[in-house]
Image 1 (tube, rainbow, N blue to C red):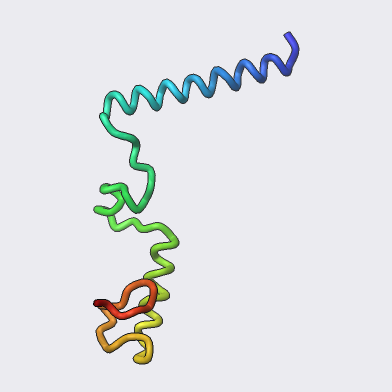
Image 2: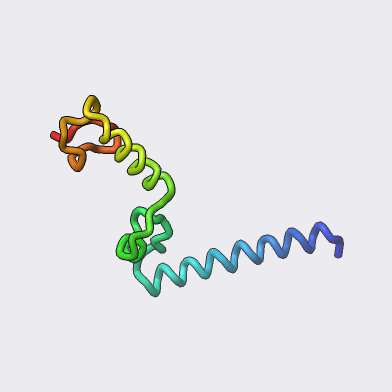
Length: 85
């Protein structure tokens, strides 16, 4: 067998194995794996946030220090720097 054929067969086997493994996981758990940080309830419970969310919160907190951006209620400021309704 040539090396190219071995690599192609191994690749097809690996993809098939992981496809079957994900299918079995879906059948056993009954739902897709929650791999997104923002939607995973266990990560939310532990207080883990994605870097983008933390950066947006930091920017919003810094902008709320300026009275021209907020109306004095910095807890009501959203990430887009507009006042809460």
